[in-house]
Image (cartoon, rainbow, N blue to C red; front, top):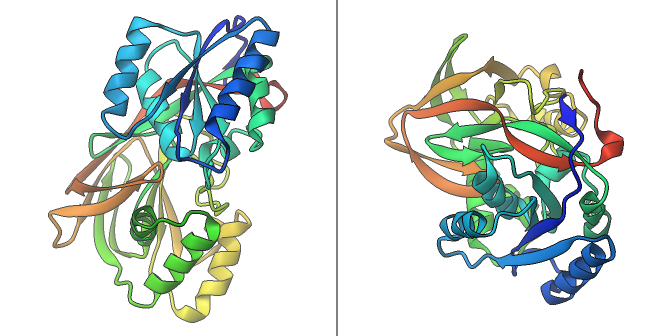
Length: 308
């Protein structure tokens, strides 16, 4: 893990998703402004609309460059801001307001937005790897297969939260038919049916499933985490291992460590995927590559370790 101290952040931009979480955004903006002003910081705000947000945010950053940009929202908002600042010196801050908050969990960022706001004042900067999956940006986890299907159904619904995800997963499980994949990496190949296939630059889904235990977010490689078809009788033990960092202990799991990969789906010209919690269709074969330490992120000083 590599982290560095940073100069005080004076000019801060907060990207707010008006529909994420249950927090009143006007009240949140007032609290953020007051917190920053009390510490000699200036807070500005950018609201997402769902229409050309990335292009609009990049234009705003070019016109009014801040010292840091905070994503105040769920995983989709975090991914949006991360893509906007990737490859620049401007660090990403996270105020987690979503139902998953996967990257915040992996980085040890408090899930209470008021506590996470302390990053304005006390933090270190950590450089993380990012992914390109089918030409699209991802900084946390992307996958194909069962979870991508559930995320897509979840995204179409109006109800949010873990209970809604579990309900959809239960409904889709019985009729789900695994696809067959052919994977070529810079180190090995694999072919066969998979219940789900995750391209992991991190460890934990927002649901607290540990899909890629023990893998750093800044080691210059990613993992393809495979769950092969399993009998119903094996589901409880497999689920237990996924919630207790025991991914590698199951006979139905495997991890491929790589820097790049090409994934072909048998008989499919395109495949349903989810990238950082956002569903999309990708043409096959899907090319995946790592971009080492291309994203600067603010993390709590107490959880950061410095590598000389």
